Length: 86
Image (cartoon, rainbow, N blue to C red; front, side, top):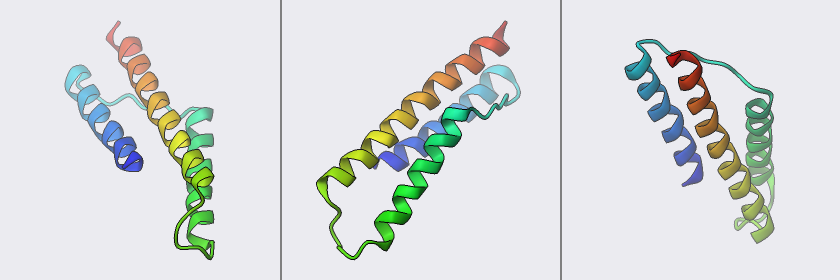
């Protein structure tokens, strides 16, 4: 669910910026790249584990990373909107 939330924020934010500004300003950040790497590393680790049910701690860490990424995306989108609105 949190992965879908992240991509929903990405798509909704991109469409909103495009509608508001007439173009889509984009900027990659170190934090975004770091969280992207962590997220997919954890996904790979989850897929290669032997157990069919992940440990509760693993799920909590993955959910926390997803929430942090989603919050960071919202902050970045807000920042891009403010920078390009002026």
